[in-house]
Image (cartoon, rainbow, N blue to C red):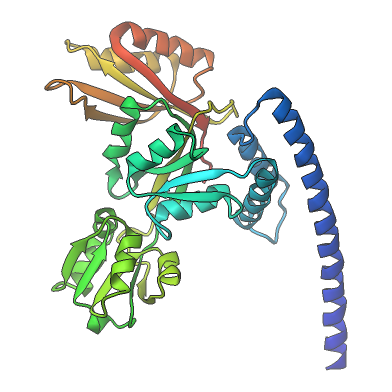
Length: 360
């Protein structure tokens, strides 16, 4: 027993020494951050640099030899960079929904706990917070691997001059929660339509006769369930902690490989990283072969398209905007050539942003 205690003390003493070194090194890093702040202030440069953020994560992945998983180290460095940015200028981040929604969680995952967060009741509110300078950046959902594209987000880009600065891919998992934690007491279930759609099979199998009630967000669903003993909510785990609910069943989403893609919107253009994605919006002429003339320049230049969506222009019948994501940066020579050809055959071409491609 004495030998075991001695060994534990030895290892803990070693950890204490390493912790002391970590504190010194983190503060040394912070001193360099403050020097960078001085340089950026003179040059009127933006404090948040998406390309630099991606560079840090890539280096971490390359240097990591374990036993820490790379994802764990990335989470740690997210908080380090969040604290570093706060030394330069505390970022204000607007996000769609309330505390405990998936968009709130995605914003925390991207910008860390040292940033200030502003909840937007609607997607439009998030755009307005950034456009009017009350937030540096906004986080909005754009598509889910199960339910598809969030069309209202696309529509907001038609009139907005904001740029897409970055993207976030986040695995989505839902928990059924209530005040009591008992499945047999549930008479109604609240949740956002997207979450309900992603848990449809589980609900039909386990709660076929309960009333399903749509709510403005998963967090709002949790708030409603917290006031009604006969109700449950479908929401992320964090909502249970925030609204003091008990989990009934976890991971109830129909597809385990369930991801949502979020966009970070702001006023800056992200620099090239070598692994980028570009989003554009195009309005084409109403003529035979118009769609072919839109897509052919990408094929001609060997550019890979990752997404194409159409939305009504709302200006006249059968007039559409096309939203296209392609791999590469708008400053790439091949992208420039493709865009010049597309402009000749289109009514409008709007670059929504080139940004680091998520490696999640």
